[in-house]
Amino acid sequence: MFIVHVFIHVKPEYLEEFKTATLANLQHSIKEPGIARFDFLQDADPNRFVLIEVYRTQEDAGKHKETTHYAVWRDTVAPMMAEPRSNTKYTNIAPDEQGWDSVSS
Image (cartoon, rainbow, N blue to C red; front, side):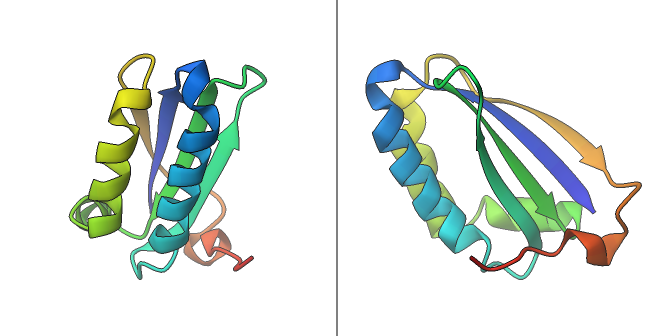
């Protein structure tokens, strides 16, 4: 598994628009066969968020960035950022591959 934590700081005036755009991206992303999980978290500071993206392979992360829904999200939220997004990449130790599968909501 290839896991990416994306750290996002949004301008306060864009909070609701950012959440709406990110939830739309999430709904499409979790349907991609290469994505095991796609979690959207808000910090105690309501202007900060984390996306936890769990891909089956590193190549699947690249394929995600080629999707239309990712491009729409990226372009929509770019002016909403208080600072550039950052990320940290991981590989899993536990759970094993099957333990990461998303649960449909």
